Each structure stands twice: as structure tokens, then as C-alpha cells.
Length: 108
Image 1 (tube, rainbow, N blue to C red):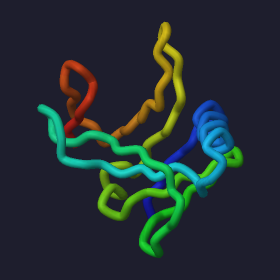
Image 2: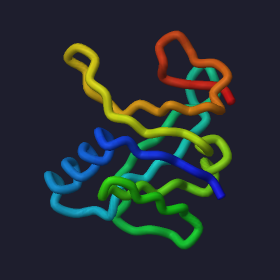
Image 3: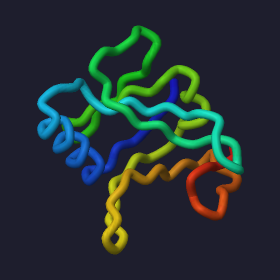
Image 4: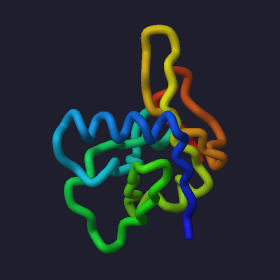
């Protein structure tokens, strides 16, 4: 079974955006072929869940992983960070072998 860890900061942000939105079961994470390095992360609200998605819950927040992303995301950590004026979800993924210069895509 694939594992994904959610930091307290990421969990707080997931709960915040769902509360602000007023609906949703959690955050859906998947990957898509993209960019100059191969893949990019895709984040969306999970309003409905399919039977083949993996559900991870930590610190009161739920993340649903698309089946085709399980192998790529296995062992990853989802964090929420602030760097200067920027705030974003960061994936600390041990499977990443290389990233493009702009940080938008990665290779496994």
C-alpha cells in the first residue's frame, strides 16, 4: 500500500480552504505528464470519491490519491510552506530523480 504523510501545516491549510469553500471531503492529489521533466502534481478538491482512490487522513485533514499516482507519490510528504510572499503546497517526494529549473515538473 502506498504511503503519503501530511504535515500539520498542510493539514491546517487543507481544512482552511475546505472551510472557506464550504464543501468538500478533502484534497485530491494526482500527477500528469507535463513540463520539461516529465510530471507535475495536480491538486483538486475531492467532492466525490471513487472506490479505487487511496484515502489518507492525518491531523484532521483528508487527502485522496488517484490510482495512477500511487507509485509516483509513495513515501511522499505533503507540506504547506511560506517563502517570502509565496505560500504553497510542497511535495517532498523521495522518488524524484530530477526537477526542471523552474520547479514545475519532475522526473521519477
